[in-house]
Length: 114
Image (tube, rainbow, N blue to C red; front, side):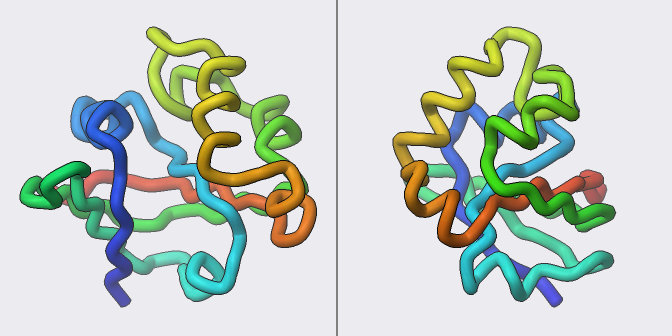
């Protein structure tokens, strides 16, 4: 199955250059449909013209992003140019603490497809 997800330019570029190897999302109804072996096509915001396809090689369930961040280095969550605090602030712009508590969060381990 192929899933389409929109991604901010900065994070799209991190995946493209190979540093970001875990995509972070809320574990809501849409993300519950993602399974090992599936593919994700990321569409780069704002125009959605650039696309990048990856294979799902792992699914990591956590109660919150801060819990997930304890187990992984920033170098695979985004890029060493960011801090975990900065990335957490960006995520909280999209997903409130209440949403994280309600649904949990998902770390999607990805491998780029050529």
